[in-house]
Amino acid sequence: MIDLSRYRVGMSDELDLDAMLQRFRDRAQAVRKRPLPPIAGDERTAFIEQAQNDFMDFAIIGDAVASVDDGVLTLTIDLRRQG
Image 1 (cartoon, rainbow, N blue to C red):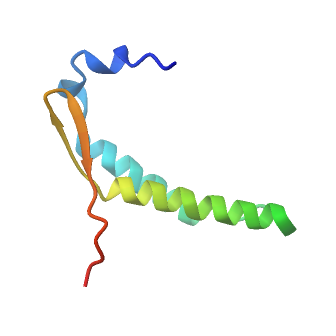
Image 2 (cartoon, rainbow, N blue to C red):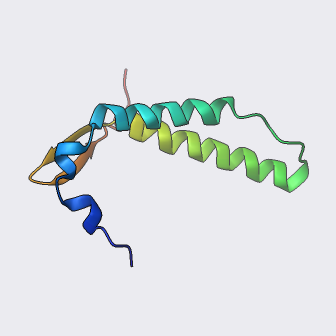
């Protein structure tokens, strides 16, 4: 079990939500720019699929609107199609 107590005391006062979301946007771009290692076959396919999943996960969180209300971090992510 993970000890979450270190995140609870005063975290909302110390947490820079904009910086946190920017780190996720930066990670998404880093995944997109990650070079393909010299692998082939099934390993190559698995690497590409993992990179696509990593990019999507980081980009989704990076696009969130974050807030802390009563000590609860909430990420609001609009998944509705645009356009």
